[in-house]
Image (cartoon, one colour):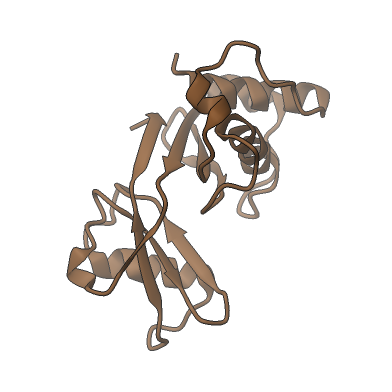
Length: 173
């Protein structure tokens, strides 16, 4: 199993069973310890339905491993769309971890490719919505922009800044 996915899975299982944040594992790839990046952790049921997804646009922790641990616990317990994960559910869960590149501002909507790039839509007053790339059912730039705006409470006619990013996806594809 991929180190990123294993860290997410082990974090959820430990946290749900003990209500304590597990320590950082001793054997992790150096990139997880030395690099910083935004990360999203998605938790699905084996039937494919979403069970939790929370992440960070930019790094908020000293390294990727700690970013994953923090976002995994949030995804499992604080996603407002779902109740916290219970111990009974643990055997029915599948994990994916997306490590985000630094966002790049774009001026041309034609540069948006929802299969390849994630998108961040933001307003001058600080509202921001993000959608990861390659989401089933999101096939056009217009759909991707609309969903990002809905997530951030941005009206369709408002002026927005568009940023794209790529992800390094670990786990469920």
